[in-house]
Image (cartoon, rainbow, N blue to C red; front, side):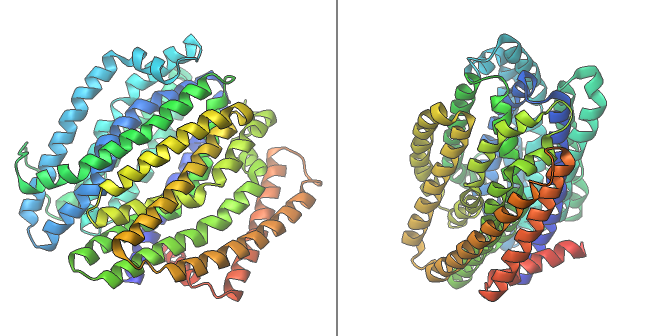
Length: 516
């Protein structure tokens, strides 16, 4: 794919991601308004842990590391019929495994929840158990939509999966709101399951259009299936290791005052906005190009594509990170502070958001860096490095939670993310030699300078406007809008003055978004 093609694909995905994130914030705003920062929201979040674990282990890992690269290889060799056979075999295997472990999880749900939040009150554990049993149907449905997305993305078709992600969150919002009077927060869990089904159904017409033919087979001996299994195993192991910090922070948060886990996760959702909209869009769009460059032995294209993706992500996420730190209070106030979510809840959430914002850049880079290794069909290096990151993360969580409470958990995740990013860059350079390091460092220096000056400008403006406004929604909205506009103008002005090359690519993506 050319730069323009990547920009077009990234722009399309970014549009859908933006809509999905907006709906996601509407969902979070509704939940916070209806239930506040309480044991109810703690239980809802804890109920997601195991279903998300199943999906991340068996679907996300296989998709990102093995399914798309192997399938892309067969499609590039014009072996479409065989590619459909392999896709069917892998899908059947994953759904079968998910079905078995889902049944077991339904039976032992109370014991599993007790492992995640052992120090939480009994009422929190009981509600979390009920929510988890509803959500356990989500991974099977999401696996079908995930593999459908993998098939379409292998053919560089991004539209239907992007629309599916919007439908998924829309169903959560609509059905959660409708069912809340009758089921409480469990209504939102039902909405999640319905949304997962809608995400899959919307992609079926596109699968038919490209000629996909489903086969009921469990042929584990096919070379393509075995190749996917070999490549996916270390990533599944990596995702499994990555769930250990989830267990750790939920354990630690369960010992804090009720609502602490909720404020931690509210902040996490906010910092995921730039990652989900831009970094994920660029990573998903660039991945087929990286894979194709490797198969064609075009190493310069590989380096240029990787460098452009990483520099563009830094160009967008570093100023957003700085702006989010400065404007944390009005941002939380606008999104969450309504209904039973009070100003004191906003203040309790601010430290977590500030520390999470510190890690936006490295979490965004982690969308690209592991995919680069996967394109090289090296799935073990990211796993081994994630083991080091895991140890750093767990140690820091236990150290920082005492002085900083839930904010310490967020800071530990951000610091360990920086360690992981640096390790991945070092080992990538060792693996492929040149990674366009000089241009990356030059761009990073310019972006840091412009972001620092922008941060000072935003802080001065916010310091002035906050003296003229209240802590109400409208006061927070005014502070947020004015601060964001000032920050955007200052940073873009400096980007032009400093002649940042990434501005052109980002504007291409923006134009594609507007055109859609």
